[in-house]
Amino acid sequence: MIFNIDDSSDFSLDNLPFGIFSTTDRDKRAGVAIGEKIIDLYALHQVGEVFDFDATILRQEALNDFISLGKSITNKVRSDIQDWFKDKDSVLARNPQVFVNQSDAQMHLPVRIGDYTDFYSSIEHATNVGKMFRDPENALLPNWRHLPVGYHGRSSSIVISGTSINRPYGQTKPVGAAKPIFGPSKRMDFELEMAFIIGKKTSLGDSVSIHQAEDHIFGMVIFNDWSARDIQKWEYIPLGPFLGKSLGSSISPWIVTMEALAPFRVPGPNQDPEVLPYLEYNGNHNYDINLEVDLMPDGGATNTICRSNYKYMYWNMLQQLTHHTVNGCNINIGDMMASGTISGKDTHSYGSMLELTWGGKNPLTLNDGLTRTFIEDGDTITMKAFAEKDGQRVGFGSVSGKILPPKTK
Ligand code: CA
Image (cartoon, rainbow, N blue to C red):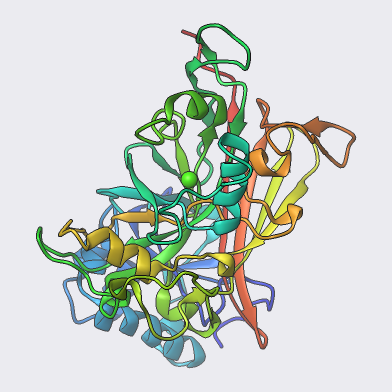
């Protein structure tokens, strides 16, 4: 090993996620996270001519062109780094200048996101929301168990971890009010999600079969789908989420590859009734990824308010992607598809304030005696995700964002 990586690090040698970073003397470029460092891939090629592809694509503002090289090449970059890191005479060992401290780097959106889709694939979340917004007796709509429900979101407002979000203005209709009002949202929320990133494009008219779907998925990030519940509740019928969602979504900066996540595959939940044949899959395609949400009031202490797991998803990524393209809808490299809020069965595993406080009825008590029904100005929400098994850890780092007061109009 060139240097020791702490056992508790998300960025183990088994992981090696890709991202876009810059420092005061390095413009935006591709990097690989390892321990507390980043390997500058462009600088590595400059000193070693180690890659047999056009290395200028490593010095771009997004990973799209790199990802377009295909998994045979992107996976080889990871496996080469694994080999070099273990070899004290390797090009990596001989050139310490290719390592950058993560603490000295600024992270950027890792891909140009052409299109963004948000699914609604946690049965616990869909049931909780259905009970609160619609009918406690028939929380799931009739289609829910037959297809992975989703909607087309906006990619323009997806931001990198660390970006603050202003409380949005909008139109709401308070309970009991005769007519709607306009003003800042009073029910700001987060949604704990994971998103996958498309690594192989298709043409209009093509469909990705369930057996091909994995080949089209490059990797994953943590996704916080900020939500204004009062705006959402008034606007969403009959066409679904709109301005209550497009106020911003935040992602973690490192794309963890599907190959790094492979050891953490687990069976999904039993799907009842049986799905239609085009959604039938073989093997294990859920992933055991621990999830955590922390709330930190302005100047206050960190409170862990939710612990969930990505393995709870009812619909898996292969089913989501297959369904998404079954009508011939084309996909492009860098497209992002989010899971929907990931809630578990017990109340501490609910992935939104809406569920944790049951629509604001049961406020959360924080460590310092403060209470919260929804997110207040100055609160920072941080989400973390990692998989761990047999001493092997593959993590995502975190995605963090602070809610600021509404912009003055
Ligand atoms: Ca969502």
